[in-house]
Image 1 (tube, rainbow, N blue to C red):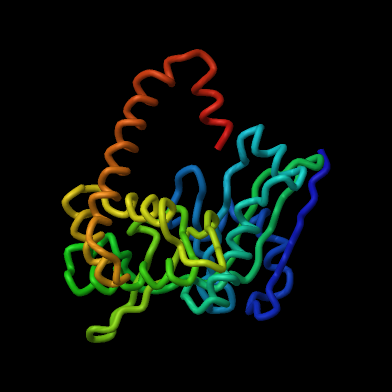
Image 2 (image 1 turned 135 degrees about the vertical axis):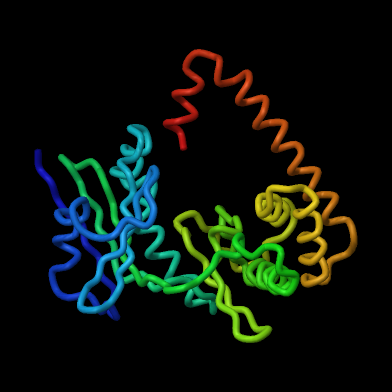
Length: 257
């Protein structure tokens, strides 16, 4: 088996020479695991600095072909590119210092994104009952949309924040699925983005009303968002109960993501 590494490191990277090249060798036996699921996130202490590394799992076969042929961009590279664009547009996300793509016999296997670790922050989900926080987050979401930014995994666990008295600063994480536009996010895309933020419908309706006020939109937005949310729930239930029982559908669902 022939293994090759594609390594990209930012011009402002504080990492010591050679760290990225050796990372695939040491990842499984060193570092502190802070999350492990389909992907794994570890912290490494490097020259007294905490470095956050996310290892993306080997893609399903169909996606692996698309990534390897350049028809889709692998997640580590998307994270790196998206972080730079988010910062360029004036919003906060942890700095990405580089990424690594591992190819076995020409096919992409694992990939790694490498960046800063933000100490002592909470997610918005942890403090979602805080009225001032939610209102600030609604304004922040309206600002993102106004500037043409749409996090496609926009849930409260993917936004960190710091607070100084009544001022909140938000940081976007898990940014490999992101949409940028030169026009504001509006219409159906805006409503679809809002509908996934909160699980409970009453909480979602309350938040959308805050967003509506922050974005200076007319009444009716919350009804539209809740309508879409209910239809998505019905579709998910239908898909789970019926479609996945059809031979071959479960394989296509899994390998087509």
